[in-house]
Image (tube, rainbow, N blue to C red; front, side, top):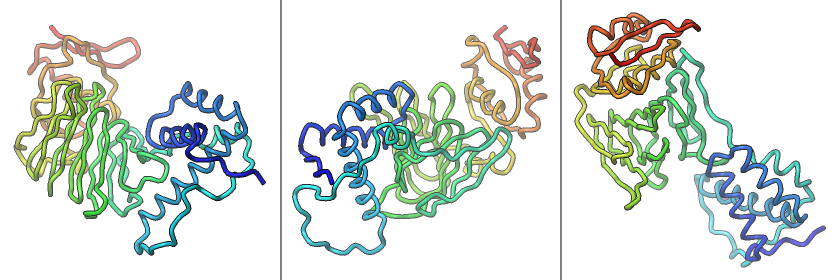
Length: 308
């Protein structure tokens, strides 16, 4: 049996870095190839990786346990032996990001997360755990989701959406991620913290019930909602917009089955409207009466919206 790899050695430190990267970031094919090359470079790399992942799993299980017993003091070094796992198999299994919860176009999906918090995904949306064993940290990859978070003061619940991050202890709120990385957070109950990474440091807004926050390249701004009952109104088959970019509205309608695209010249025109998803086609057809745009049918049958 192989001796454990020293976790404080260069190999041990690199293994921990890789495990944290696999658990906490998107992993495109090029990144997976880098990990596979590192694992194959030395048999100790795969052994150290397994040790690091095993430790991370044990730590997560300890945090999730309802009763915490004080164990005997741990030795300074990890003492369990590494398993003889082929580097190629480790890369194939462990370099895969955690599976996402997804909803099909035109269909909502209600699920209960690992911590017991219910969430409803809007059509064409994708939500995944932040890392492999995450219970209260998620990434909204696309679309929109309504969260009813179970209160747990010891473990804040977080949702990352593009460059924005939402942090709560327990509340009811909606997160919408637009294709241009503009993020909208609306709070029905409780208090949330919305932040966005910025060159001068994170920009933060505290958003309470009946308020919304918009996070984009210009910062994070909080404002009152016209109607608190509009938070997550899509769950009841009603879409509501207040000065939303036309590109965002059309992207939402496309997730309900519309086939339309907006040219850059018309994308930032503002829309304030309420409609049902089944009214998408007549809504778009009527846009020229409210906005300086034209709507034309393209060769593939989709709609093209351009500025006049």
